[in-house]
Amino acid sequence: MAPVFCLTMISSQNPLPLQQNQPQITTMTDLSLISALLIGLAGSVHCVGMCGGIVSAFSFAIPKGSAQWPYIVAYNVGRIGSYTLLGGLTGYMGSLVTSNLAGGLIALQLLSGIFLLLMACYIGNWWRGLSYLERAGAILWRKIRPWSKALLPFKHPLYALPYGVIWGWLPCGLVYSTLTWSLASGSSYQGAAIMLCFGLGTLPALIAMAASIESIKHLLTHPLTRQVVASCLLIFALKMLWQAY
Image (cartoon, rainbow, N blue to C red; front, side):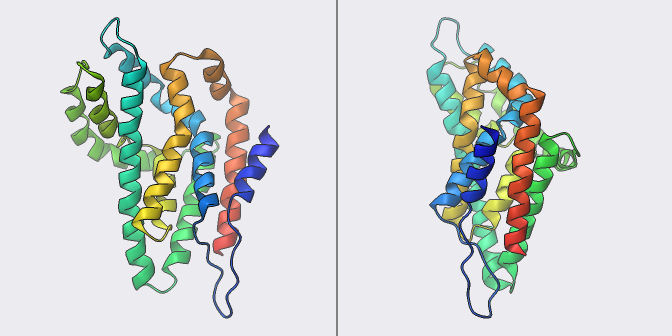
């Protein structure tokens, strides 16, 4: 299972086109979107630890006797919507850099590879340097989070939609790492597509937690799972850095 996952992630990166007297530059294809989906899926081991308490608290906001699924779906639509918006914004900013700065695309691709490398170290508990970035993001988060309290408890599933939008801004090293990939994507559309696929990749873990599917939760929290996933991300990051170089 683990070797297949690693090979799938690596092979999903599109080959580098050769241009005469030009550096090799990666452009986004449908396979890049698959890579983003797989990174979201791989990062699920991080989501379980980071968002487990949030999902537990979320269940208490649902009216007693109400079906959970409409609230879970609305929350995740809002959360992934925030990721998509952020991806579009960072993709647009990246396009400004690449169109106005010589070598800008290569620099952004190196940055995204470095951040993915840091994410691998973070998930594997080898080095948690991304926690410093999460602390910086917490400054903005403290200003945004109070808005979500006005939506609790949920009176209707639609209340969970803006709640998810707000919680999509939760400081998260995994999200920040993937946003650097959107930054190097070349356009707002491509950046948004990458973060959309990334968000869809995180769905299985968060839905499993919300639905209390213990077998999946146990698998994702197992120490061996973290090490395998971190190793796959490490290989993928090194390949991205090699391509950019």
